[in-house]
View 1: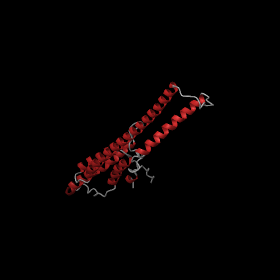
View 2: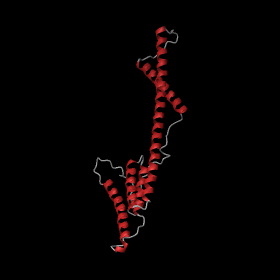
View 3: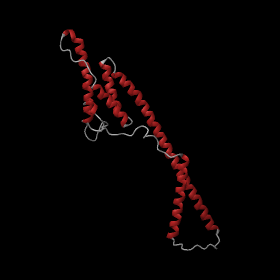
View 4: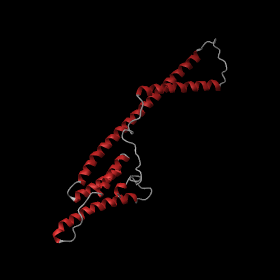
Amino acid sequence: MTPRRKSPSLNERELRLWKVGRALVLTFVAAVLVAGGVFYGLVVLLDFQEIDTTAKLDAKTLFDLVKLSFGVVAGAGALVALVVAYRRQRVDEAGAHREATRLHTERFSQAVDKLGSDSPAVRLGGVHALAGLADDAPDDNLRQTCIDVLCAYLQLPYTPDPGGDPAQQEAHHRYLALRKVRHTILRLIGDHYRRPEGTHRSWQGCDLDGCVQ
């Protein structure tokens, strides 16, 4: 038996974001440090070894300092806006994932109900529905769940073929119909693993041990 690839759980996929206050403070501090580093680099680059503390600030120098101050504030504000936009995007992505998971769960329940139907034709529809859900699953855990259900169906006990006795004709036809359902599952699994390189192969790496036990 090959070990099942461990996929991140739903809790591990939750937003890993700092609190807004902490993110903004760290962003502002980073902006100030960067501005200080740039200023220090300019001082070293221009080789200002001594600063005359007795010199008076003229209007041009004062204006340049004001512009520098506003530039630092504007840069910090831009970084804050970037952090807020990033958080908003992550929240939107998480919301979209939750909605996709909810819709997947609803469709999954409907497909499993079909597999429990007394009608072989309805069961066959449930098989195709589960295979489609496995292809469209928003994450690997949900995809694996669909495949597990299909594999578990193959291991369910079934009534053997009663043979060609005319008195058992109805039971024989039902056996053939349910065998068709099982063969369809095997065919779908094989089709997904025989797809050529470069095509969508969403089942690659999934655990199929339950189909061969």
